[in-house]
Amino acid sequence: SNITRNQAIDFLNSIVGRSFFDETTFNILLIGSVEYRKGTHLMIKSIPRLLRALPNARICFIGHHGDNNHQPTANTKLSPKILCSELKKNEREKVAFTNYIPHKELPNAIMAGDVFPFLSLGDNFPGSVAEVSLMGKPIIALMTGGLAEMLTEDNKCLAYSLGSKTKNLSEKLVDALVELYGNPSRRKTIGRCLKKSMIKRYDAQRVVRETFEAYNNIYHKKKLEYLRVNIN
Image 1 (spheres, rainbow, N blue to C red):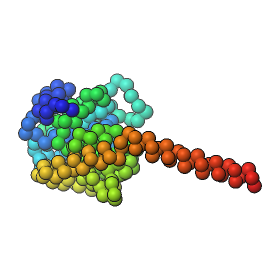
Image 2: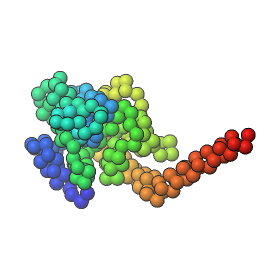
Image 3: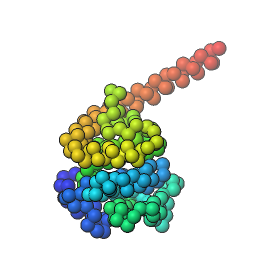
Image 4: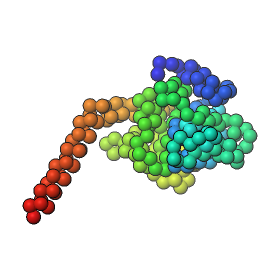
């Protein structure tokens, strides 16, 4: 995206419908459907402690949620009102939900973010991880499923890892956010490493070649098995 952080903030504020972000806020964006399997509840649980540590934090969920009149997928979407029902009024004011943002506009939203938690309890290869990484933004991740594979290179996690267990995850998440808030240079380093890795590992020609080789190997194995069975 060619827009500045302040322009991106204006873009998101127009969607939220209020002056939610500004140049002084620490913007935490979670991209993906608002669902249990995406770990939405883990972020919500961390908010009281997070806001005590970082009063200028703003948490924004970008994706389909349960207040829709329809269900765009078979997975149950959670209601923001119910999710935030146990938060105090001053805490709820620092949480926003945009609902779905069209794919072509998503880079404008990403540009407003300072850090991006991915807390999926189990996921394949979420495209939003690639999009955030390609924009050089830092990711905090629960290292499960495809997230672990996407964010690891040469046995090293390129994101800020929360490990793969959910025990005490909210506390670990807050600690990670506080640490990255106080260390902008580390945020830049994480974002830079993720961008470099995504460009190298998911280059279109490389992906096509490796996919072809994988299917070719499977074909030859199946062919040998077929011949062996029929010869016997």
